[in-house]
Length: 226
Image 1: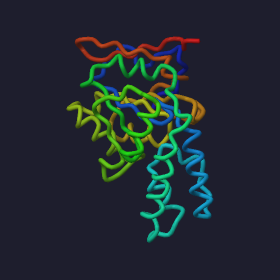
Image 2: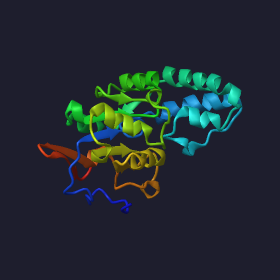
Image 3: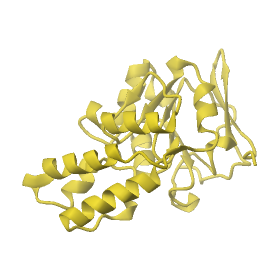
Image 4: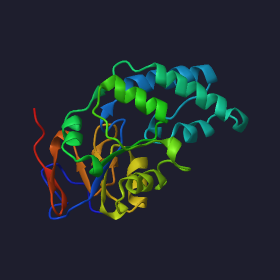
């Protein structure tokens, strides 16, 4: 993999893509306060300690490591209820809405580790302009870091995964994107840039502009807006 670059260097220059597959939490919206509150309540109720580095992985995968197998479904239902009920302080990250809105419907999708009810609640709470195609953990047998979610997103858009850009904020999602054969852009913030292995690393989506051309999508890296 190429070394992560700063927003002043576009290592994707000269390449074109057919679609962009966006992660949601930490990439398009900031739900961290609500996530932290919900999982802290859940962990206290269940008497376990959740690893803060688990961001970007499906809740079931995390819970399976923390509770007995015969109680996983119960624990998962509880944390989903907590998270769906707490949609306070969820905000759109800088540049996210503009970047999403700049793309034609057939060239954009959200691919998230959330369950569909939770994704719907968070997008509504943030008033984010969601695309028509949203792939959730409910849609694939395996979640990130497995490639299934991004393969499903590409399939729903009718494009080759190798012609897709994946935009992610977490190592698990970037790993999934690579495994699916996609080109990856990492957004630093949830994790430091040094911990993100991607074709391009930027400081925020306000550093990106995607040009729609007859030959495909072209990525431009610009200085973040103040």
